[in-house]
Length: 117
Length: 180
Image 1 (cartoon, rainbow over the protein chains, first blue to last red):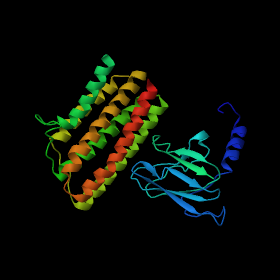
Image 2 (image 1 turned 30 degrees about the horizontal axis):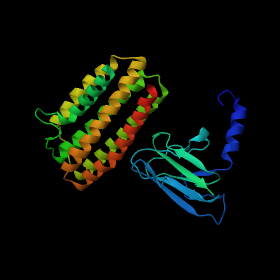
Image 3 (image 1 turned 30 degrees about the vertical axis):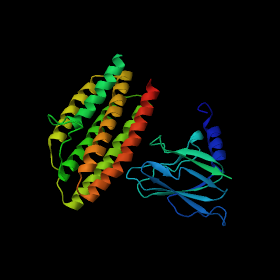
Image 4 (image 1 turned 90 degrees about the horizontal axis):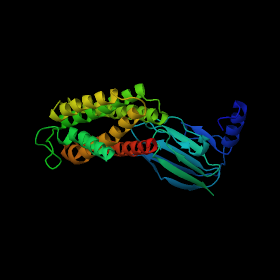
């Protein structure tokens, strides 16, 4: 992957990002299924709670950082999506497109999974 | 065998900062601390790890070690900020004490040891110390600071910090394993 030209990398990341429409630091999104439901994952005590979530395609997943330290939510495989830094109280909304295993790239022992049915 | 010996000595050294901070004090007979003293110990413990991280950021070329050190610096500063906000709200002045003084003295020795190393030897020494230090701090928080804290908000802050320290320990052990 590191040997690919920049244009190829951008295309690859764009392709990977398309299924996951992401809205950061916002509780709402203008894109997605109007009949979708919303699930919340709390980041508390250095854990994602729940750390396993089963959703339908188009559902919203809101991550909220309740810890005193900065966290992030990042796809493990290829880092194809990330929330960026989430300070205390910050929200990150993900619209589920495909199943993902994710982690906090700052605290790499913190992991979770989203299963899209 | 010498690796094992060093690991045991390292762990003992870090743990001794808390449990042998005052002569005749040990894990079975922990020091008695007031809330202002507990607040001081908590801030000092975080400052010490920020100090270790600063050395790592100056000396290490290993990306995993550097990232870990950045996280330690950021997280422990966040804990200090919370502690300072709490003591300000409670109008409590953290009080220096024998445990804090011993921790600072031991930290100076550890810093000197870290400064004397370079390259992979430094990375190993830094991460080994982080594992030992976090084990000692977790033990102290759980067996001394939380049980002895009288103020409910101080106790709650220490309880919130505990999982952060445990995640740091797991992270340090992961980096330690990758360095082997």
